[in-house]
Length: 368
Image 1 (cartoon, rainbow, N blue to C red):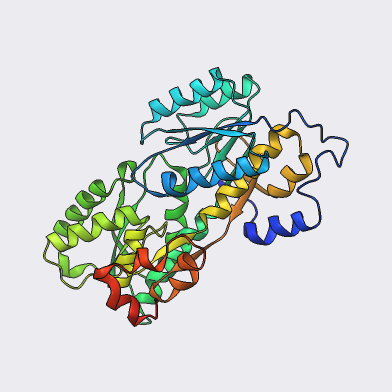
Image 2 (image 1 turned 30 degrees about the vertical axis):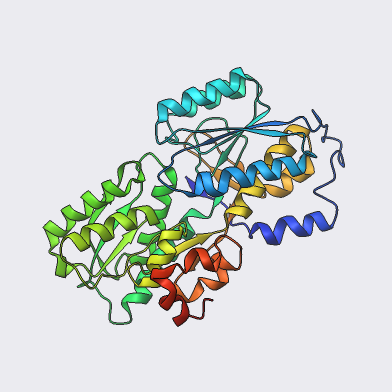
């Protein structure tokens, strides 16, 4: 996949448009012909349960936004494939049979789902790729800027290693699932920062993003390299970072090397507080999920101006070119940034983060 353009954050694009009246402007041009009113049914297909974000953030935010946009007349039909590509294809077929109006698809396997996407297209149901770029004739794509995620992770590792970092420093890379196109982009972004500056001593593509698979991979890397010879670990997400940390501790490592993550899961925020995980990547799920809901509703209501405003980027997939897209920006979450990110945005409360085990660590950074 090739990134064509970079978007500004949703908060800086959507709200000003709404302020100018554009987002409410159905039919403001000749091509905008609303196809239906508020009786919208959005099919939402999410990929797995190992990452808590999908059930905790994405689904409820999309459901709430669809209800808001349709004066409480629209609804969301939700299914989670639990990392099973075959199950997700069956779920998509069921939504075609139920004649939902539009589908938001976060693919388990971006390539394997392509025939099902084609079936939806043939049935006249638009498919918007959500968070991961599915192959096949999708109508639009919304995700975070995935290459930037990897760049932020790689750059953070180098900053933590300091000015003395060099090729003598051995890095283990714990990449995501090979069936997820995002994982490839995260890896490419990280390597653009790390290559030539440190040594990638071992690298794994982790099946299904599962922490237990990351733990097994890390145990293998420790056996090859020796626990004292690992300067840092690039982990593509927080769940796998937990597996990496478990493997290091089981090997008797008491002073953990810097370890990256992504998704700002609550457990990861607490590990960052405790000094076990160096950083995560904060991605504003409300921005992504609300924009996806806006795109879905606009698409089936024929609000072309709104839809075009939300998809000003262009993306190429292995099967299609110049797909309308929106790329949402991200930021590094280290200990000093917890208050300004997940707390400020209402993702977690201070009470949720600062449980008994973490009260002193919270106090040390003024988190009260």
